[in-house]
Image (cartoon, rainbow, N blue to C red; front, side, top):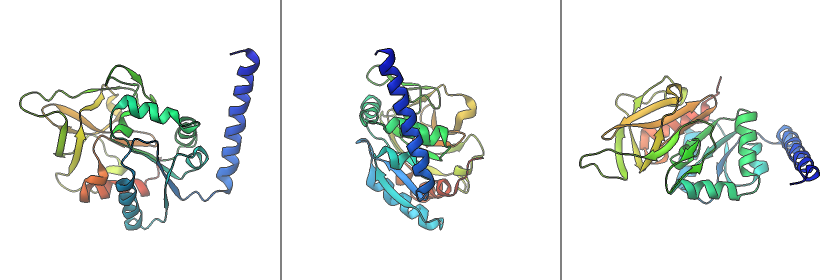
Length: 242
């Protein structure tokens, strides 16, 4: 890239962020963006989020979208994900402006963010499934294959107890011995201890949720976790990160 084309690219990016800031002032900010990048279980997540919004008495449009402008101006963002890390990362980056819009909303504006399953894994530095694939690196760590040992099957599929590692508003009110639904073969490894929000046991400790600032994400599926999952999503709808 020439020096002139590099300057043009920087100028274009600055113009884009300026447009997003202007749009944000005029837009109805009570919209939750459910990111559609071809790698998520969108409709079950959308149904669960609508129920959570209704139960928390917070009116919000749940919009399934890949539009960078809508995402950059959203009130809250949910990134689902199913499948292989490399495929999900490729699909996310294949949508022009999507990663930049997510960064602007989440990292610059501080919009509350929820990642689900591979949507959580994409927050890591890298995924080690089918080679090495860069993640978003918002919550540093690796995504590696779980090794439960014994007769425990991989993938891990089913209900497991959630062990809270920190007092986080999104995990409030879950009751005694909360159980949530998992289906995965890979999980977070080596994040900072302060970024671990919850764990579970499946032949070994598995990181079940991570959190940092306005970012919260789960390896399990809250939309499939019945009462506990609905409580978590309702908490997210009400959450105002400090």
